[in-house]
View 1: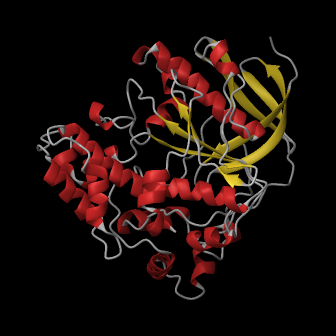
View 2 (view 1 turned 30 degrees about the vertical axis):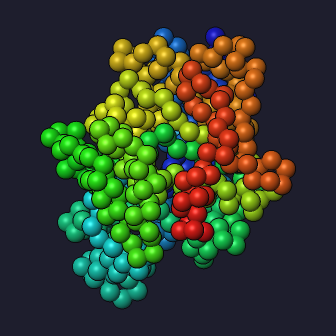
View 3 (view 1 turned 180 degrees about the vertical axis):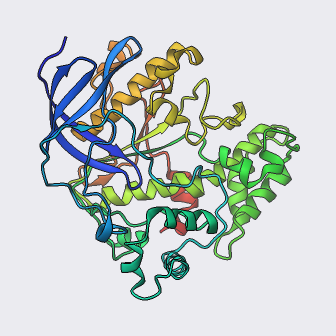
Length: 414
């Protein structure tokens, strides 16, 4: 049944896509939905999803088109209203990005090198004088052809443009001084085995699914030591921490030990210190943390075998509803857990609190006792996280980073 509803719609898309909020009033028109936003009407399309009617809107305008003088500039919020109905029934072009994070990027990607590449492009496109102003007028296809020919598009994570981090400071300096936006809510976490999927690319001889060689304890220690062969890191101490307690015949456990070392250094501990600093410097922000410990029937990384545990990006399967779109490939538990995780994120976007409004697949008794912990209790830092698993949802792990991130890696990250 169709009717008029007032909704708060928040669109989120990572890396250069969009963030906007608008009030929507929905009206029914056959197979389409016409939505009146604050700036004007847009037309979406009705479709069926799991036997339910869903309205889809692709590419609702949020910023002034980056044309002419606005090319290469920061997005400018769209404020000019329109009268005619905009057709948003079809997906727009995707954001330009590297196809997969595991692909090798062998050039030095720094702001200085990016500027050098831009000037080379300007020279090749006859834009040597006032090169930036000139490039803004060059046909888009010519720029794309140059990029493809020279393989010079290497996106990098840089300072945010929404004010969370300052544009004139590096990440470490910003967090050392507390120089970042304080009035934000943060939901952040990791999967249980962040390093395992990466090692099949980093050390394929021993971690690739096909033709992987056997691994023993001395070799595992050697691999960890070589992995952290930096002048300021005690690599043998790192190797002992992750490998010494494992029995020499437990080959998959030895692989896991190497993977934990890599994952802690590259992802887990940086995420921990990121969260800790936000909680430490801001008395306004709420920081919620989680660890994803449930492995989907079919993961995003196809080579994530059993010993690898819950691999990096396994959570994406549930967050973006893959079991809902392809239920024939997933278990009933996968299906309801995906509904739950989607509800976690939508609740966080709407309210700033990840506590879901519906506990799909969770018993009423269990859901009554669930309270998502924060990284700060009053004035004290309390680095606790919630387990995200259908059978253990709501379980809290207290001070999980004491031994690895604080005890072992602390002197290197601080």
